[in-house]
Length: 242
Image (cartoon, rainbow, N blue to C red; front, side):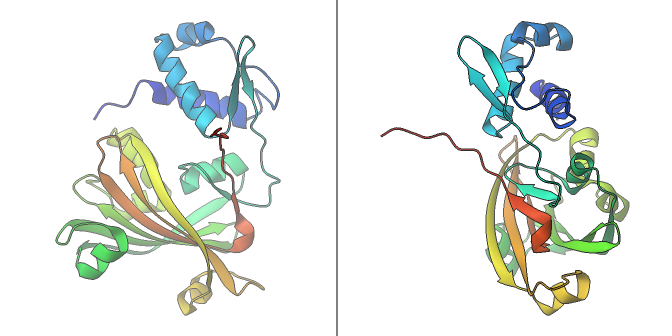
């Protein structure tokens, strides 16, 4: 599956903003400059800019250009809930030293219980993965992942310990487009207490959701259980007048 033309443009501009090349209040180069730089059409540039606008990075201003409105978080949290971001990408953005430990990696068939939990059809072949994410030596996230095997062929523990999304996008050429998430605060389970360094916390923030690709296929269901001081919620919204 070929990568969408706007994706490398989107990633490049996003990296320029997050790295501080373009700071809060700056205006980006013109669309025409980007078409020359990336050898693409204006519509391709506009799609990349529209996605960054939807994610709260940019604010188009009529007659002036496109302004950067992104501000980095205060550095205390690793994950932001408001975009589709892998653990590896979050680590790169935050400049933290991180590692991933794969606890379980196996193939399963979805039964009724998995169907009700995830939305995958009964009988579908899935990869079932449990991973613990570390910042430095502290275990801060416990991930339970289900991946549809037909859409994610070739997954293996070494990929799960590095970056599954990087493998899906760069090796398989998948375009990841949409995520539906549910965020809840939950009492820490015995499994959480066993795997995570909760310190004084007796609860976790659970982020559970389905992820879809450009073909409209749900290829992933994940529940991530976070130590509370390592996650923040960021959402961009546009006021609609009635």
